[in-house]
Image (tube, rainbow, N blue to C red):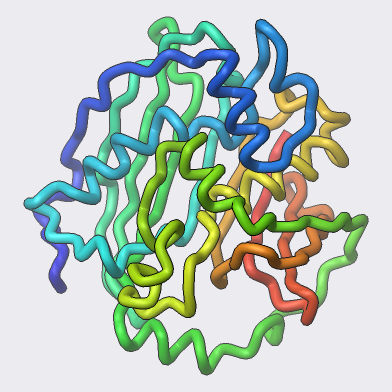
Length: 271
């Protein structure tokens, strides 16, 4: 295994971040979210917005030379936000992180980072990001997988269209600070053994959560206490997708599927 197991438990100081009305609105616009609560002089932030203050520290962990991660093969495979209270314009956020686990399986090497976003001395949100260092075995496994073959189909409560614009990756990069070139440059994406530029997983998650907030939380993002997603397959600019949702034991689950009905993202939300 290439990743340095001895780094488990290492902590990182992410400094501070000021939530501004412009940043909240810019993130909403970059993810095609038209909820008016994200606009105006005193907006609340999207449940997914926590990735914005957390992202620089997540990347500091990934770039830690002691970790030994191959960034060209790095992809984001899952995300979870535990929300004690929503972020709002005017919040001064203290950011700290811990590298909580490193492991290896047939998909490759992966590591999980937990980022605490603290406001006024209390944790407002816990951001948990899991990254995968892709290997040859992982690519073979994905080709062999039969999409949607396992499990009983859920009882779908509703669905709505979700369109990925051609310029979505660049807009999302500017709003989130995530300028990973696999999302912006065809040559880099292909050198990373991808078919082409792929959309940020967090962008797809934010677009899906926009529908969840609208349809299941009455448009009130402050009701969301947990938002999570697993990024199963790449999403590409220009795709026409669908968001679907259904009940689960502890809230709701949802997925994003392509025209063939293949699930690209599967998520969950708690209120």
